[in-house]
Length: 89
Image 1 (cartoon, rainbow, N blue to C red):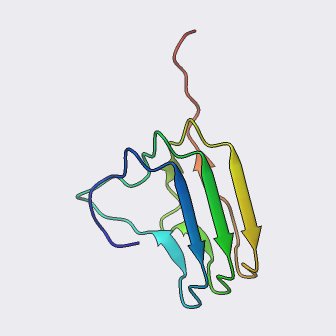
Image 2 (image 1 turned 180 degrees about the vertical axis):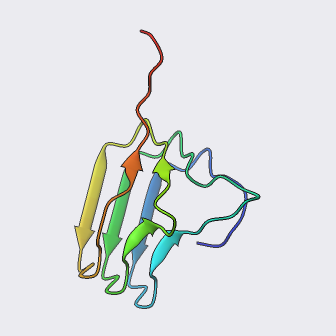
């Protein structure tokens, strides 16, 4: 994905048939793409060079994340570390 502002309203991330993609989010000191408060679903298909979701192993804050579908991502080495919501209930 291009470097840019956060994606606070993103609900579904669906990436398919991107044969040269190695990471989805790249580190940028200007933006914090690891904060995805509405993200519920990630679908990844036929991304043979994809190694990880973030190129810098940062913690991903996605409190609504429920589904992960992966197919044909043979180079995927790790899933992101997730932030734990520690707010009292």
